[in-house]
Image (cartoon, rainbow, N blue to C red; front, top):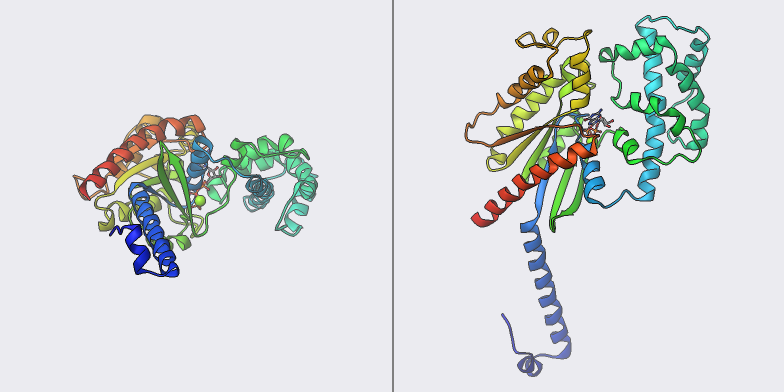
Length: 364
Ligand SMILES: Nc1nc2c(ncn2[C@@H]2O[C@H](COP(=O)(O)OP(=O)(O)OP(=O)(O)O)[C@@H](O)[C@H]2O)c(=O)[nH]1
Ligand SMILES: [Mg+2]
């Protein structure tokens, strides 16, 4: 209630007046926060491990700001060095286990050295200089390339090829990661990361979670007041198994998670947007005569080397689990490492989300 300041002066001591003034200011701030919270759009990024959730969030920063801070870029730089060394170790080990001969036998010594040296916890430009010539030499060996071609049989991050192909630039002492390098950098998310980005003067709160099995029990902590769920699927993973148990098909796992989310009663009024991600990798896989989606999904009845047929099949797999026929489900084919693609896709997604948010506000 508003009170006339002149009357208040006779009723209260200066201390009491000050106290009153402070509490009125606090009330105003709380009210302002409440209004801002009401206007805020909360977007949950969900999906299995490696589906591209954190990459999508990086794109939001690249497109809408704020820029990556210097310290963060330095962290990415170290992670990129780690991605490269770990990636080559995995390939050397796989070549051995798959019994693929070296093209140049002298590389076996280099491979052994790489496997035997202790895994450094922090790699900087100076330390990385010890590794980069070894990695460059091994990447040229057809034995390693053949192991790489059989990568679906073991666990290798999708970005290592990009980094190996950019090794000369990355090995320079003055290397500073570009946005493209940052987008390819792989670090599994542990826990929950929240990031607010003002878009069209509306605060968008992005919530990024870890998608691996051990991380999923934390998801329910962020199920409150969600405006929309952006569910990411790595569509190129139809022939791969999970890192967590090395036997479950990755696409099947992703579909099961989607089933739980889309049919969850907490999300009855939440719009769900499905991103069939890693379109670039899917395109390459479908064109490859050495693989066939039918080997993993015998129910596939189209042309297994037609990208449209494969996309249609994967989409139907996901839309098919939705139990409520009235529930809206939007979908997009995305390449999360491609800024132009995400710019276009997010523009249309944003309009859907804002309209939906307005409807919710009007109902309140
Ligand atoms: N080529 C390609 N790579 C992608 C795409 N989307 C993501 N990646 C890469 O895939 C890897 C995994 O992406 P992340 O964004 O870390 O996946 P995530 O869903 O956050 O994974 P978790 O944190 O483990 O749940 C990274 O190395 C990305 O650069 C894509 O559309 N195309
Ligand atoms: Mg992540």
